[in-house]
Each structure stands twice: as structure tokens, then as C-alpha cells.
Image 1 (cartoon, rainbow, N blue to C red):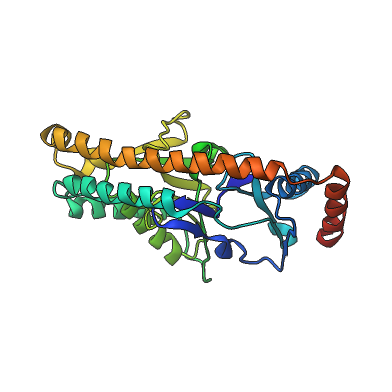
Image 2 (cartoon, rainbow, N blue to C red):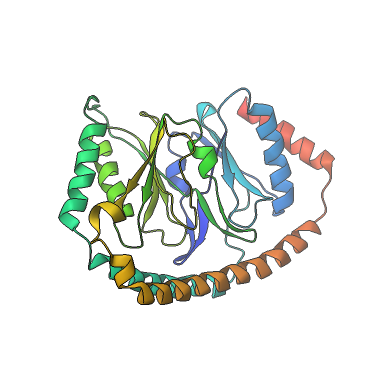
Length: 313
């Protein structure tokens, strides 16, 4: 199974990326229930029944880990989607937006010390090596736009281990704010698209205009931003490699030179992130409590699952 998000709570508000993931899907079935819990039980039963028969893509909920938003059975060309809308007020999004504005100032500290020519050359050299033995495919590639995590009532969550565990090669992109991690991945993505490869582009759940991961299914590789708040270190050095853009492209000693300013801006933007998460937690707990009170029976769930199976089959 592949787990990911198609909706998220970001500094630009609630975003919805479902449409690109319905590429090749002939039938989209929308569940009629407005109960997150009931829809999740329906979807979980379907997951259990199909996971050993066909690949299942699980759309996680931006509300809580306890909910599932939908599933896609790509080989059967069917998607089943539950209730999908932001249940949160704009208060949390405003806090995230304020945090992003401060984060932009943090990026400027590093941008002034970056060697952009070297950064571009690093991306081009990487791409040239990556695609050296790959022939161009005469087709129009498709981009599946997703997120590997978001801000929820459970905090900042992600599905990175699920998405990367079976890949042949995983590149950890390291660096600081503004040191070109997203730009590096965008340049690699553009080259892969020119080769005709479909891509899974995972957007940042803080700033959705940035990219946190590029996954190339045909090559079974990915590049991803493995810094906070989704910090990971290589566990299997035979297939996991670090590319450190701070070390490669930023003037040595930048962290030390601007230490006071960096610490101040980091604390400020993180404080707004914490405020936004606190709002989501408070509002989310009320949403979950209200949803738990909505009555339904296992018989209802079983009946809907049977109807859906008939449609799927």
C-alpha cells in the first residue's frame, strides 16, 4: 500500500490536490455519509479486502491519523472518496502564514551567501549522471501532485517511511532554509519530465509552492527534503545518500556569522507554527468528539461495502 495526502492545512490555507491523482481513473465513487468515522470504517474494510489482490493507494486525512479520506485502486481504475473539506477555521492558517513570512526572512540570510551558479551546476551534474543510461520516452508524462504529510490534530505527521521503504535509491537533500533544496528537486524533475517519465511531486505542507519530494516510479528512486520538521538520516547506506546543499553551495561559516539573527528568526517562525498547531488541535478535538456522536451500525457499513465491492468488481 502507498499512503499519502491529497489535501493539507498550509500557510496558504486548505489545499486540494486530488484531481491530478485521478489520472487514468474511470470511476470516482463519493461516499454519501458525512461521518468521518463511518467513512473510515468503510474504507478500511475495503483496504483489508483488496490489499493482497491489487495495489491500494490510501489517502490520509488532514484532520487526524485516525481517519482515512479515500482510496484509489489504480489497476481497477476506481477511486472511492469520503468527505473532503476543511473543517478548520482560518485562524490556524493565519498563524502558519505569519510563520511563513518570518521563514522567508530566514531564507534571505542564506540566499545572500549562496553560490547559485554552483547550485545549478550541482543539479545539472546530478541529473546528467542519473539519466546517463536512460533513453527518452516518446510520450507525454503525467505529474501526480501530493503531500507526504501535513499539520493535523496529532501534530506534524508524515508518510515518508511508507513511500521510500521499497525504493532502490533514496537521496536525502540536506541544507538550510533558502539553500535551494526545492529548486534542486525542481530542476531534476524538469529533466525527468523531458525524458518522458511520470513523476510523483510531493509539495511542502508549510509552503505548498515548494517541493519536499520528487519520486520517479520508473527509476524507483526519490529525492526528498530530510530536514526538520521531517528530519531523517540514512539507515541503509547501500541505497540512501545525502546531498548537502549547505556544504556544497553556501559560504563556509554562514551559520556562525549570522547565528544571532538565525536563532531569532527560527524561534519566531516556530512559535507561529506552534500556535497554528495548537488551534488545529483544539478545533480538531471538537470535530472528532462531534463525529464520534454520529450514530451508525456495523450492518450499515457492511451493506455499503458490499455495494462498493459489486461496483469495483
